[in-house]
Length: 121
Image (cartoon, rainbow, N blue to C red; front, side, top):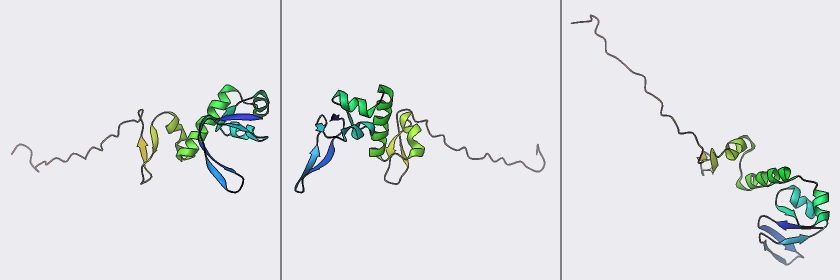
């Protein structure tokens, strides 16, 4: 069963060899379908596609979810991320505005008027 990586991933092969598997690497493993289901890879053979059992739409959604997990997007903010209202987080935890972010509105200060006790003087 084979899949092809859509994202670079760390790998460990035997105890002493490890590294980063680049995008496009073909993984031949009985559990390769799980990488497809998680959105890290696409099926590279019919067996993997059959076991993963995903439509093009569910694959697209899994890949979007994978991207959001990697970027650390909180589940409550995922809709705003998908809509382009945010692109991630600043170090202080506040969202970084995206291309579709609504401009922040400045709060108006309350108006104050001076009215003399007797009008017209």
